[in-house]
Length: 361
Image (cartoon, rainbow, N blue to C red; front, side, top):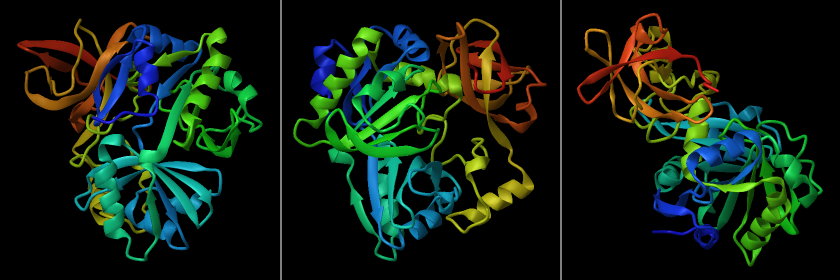
């Protein structure tokens, strides 16, 4: 099992640790609910150094990205980022990712999910027919996400970069806490605002940045946050988690990701997805709140009033913000609007739920 450069910090702070995507990761410190509310109301720090990062360079870098991702990366200028996904040859999703434009038409960073680093890298290599210069820098890249409404206010004294006014899905590069070549982006996964900090795992960079952040933030209530609260936060926003809500068998159109699927360019499986769009999908990813008492879990059946299967729960939890159980899952199109009642099958019981627009909170 791998460690991140911050693993010993987590253990010293008493974090509950568990394996995640091959890494020894912190699940919680003070408790998921407390950590969740800390991020929603103040600010918290997530170690997400397990994520993958690829650097693509050269005149054909954009062409490679355009051919294998669904969104239109030609719209990106330096300092902007874009949410996208890699479709497979059948129209399923290999991974969802973020494309960062470092230098327009020349240098890009691709950020992928930890569990898919090898799979994604192989897909890029397979389609790199024009000798784009590629570097898998995942192992030597640190990534901290500082999320919450007070995150940038706490961090601003540590840098001359203007991060207080950083717009959503943009980034800047510069010196942070005395460490050079730090990339600070606003592409968060919690819906609470904040930034992500990318930097090279070199020398004492990790300790310098971690210690500086907590020295500045602890007096203001900043706390370390585990992956447990990261999951409840993203679920309240209706954000997809790869492996749960999207995978190689789900299409971006079924997953509500039509907005990142641009048919103005050629890309893998475009004809399949165009056909889906023209003919209509048969199932759709929706959000729901529980009416009856019970927690929906990944893999639970979604049924209609007669008890017939109409779908499956992909993610579910007790929402700390709402005090209610929520979930997302795929249902037959006939039940996606919320007009027809849906039920979650928990053991031998059918628990009533109501299809709800996302985000939940």
